[in-house]
Image (cartoon, protein in one colour):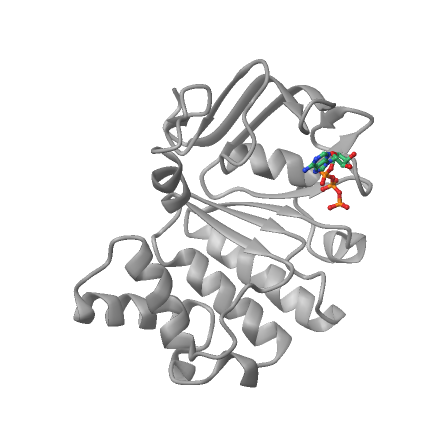
Length: 226
Ligand SMILES: Nc1ncnc2c1ncn2[C@@H]1O[C@H](COP(=O)(O)OP(=O)(O)OP(=O)(O)O)[C@@H](O)[C@H]1O
């Protein structure tokens, strides 16, 4: 297998749960690529992301994600696959009654980090990347929507993922803040993490163009232009 390929789907069928949502899906994404995923509501974008993060099994076909074979994936493998993936959703899923530090620490403890000094260094590292290094002790409910999404991105980066899956990460943000978030994700992709971002925001795609894949009438189309 090509070392640089982090997602491969070959002739994959995706069911939700019995109804065939996408058939014969073929997709390859390389390290460091930034890819938009578009498609009408209900056309299967989230289902595709769910297959990639091991939430939905693949029906037919073959899939490899960050070195994990989706066909052979069992319950025990899923936490290990998820450590190779960063997941960023539209609604931030932050613990709003806690500081940024406590939010990051929560995820780190859950994914096996123990050494306080290493944890602290890593937190500052990822917060630096998203421009929030000075806000470690801030409560997350005191942050703006854009800042909260930055914390979510920092949280996704903690375990140095091969891939970030972002499901409408700008859905709750104003246009300028949305653009800042996409610029940040693109910058992150340049350091090697592949990013697959589902979005309905065509304006952002026009302003910040990149490869586009599209779910449409039960298929996944590649290299779409708007
Ligand atoms: N848990 C579920 N059980 C049954 N059907 C589902 C389930 N989740 C999604 N579906 C169906 O699968 C299809 C694809 O849904 P999916 O959420 O992947 O679409 P989407 O493109 O992500 O939509 P949106 O843009 O609204 O997020 C839809 O017809 C939806 O109704």
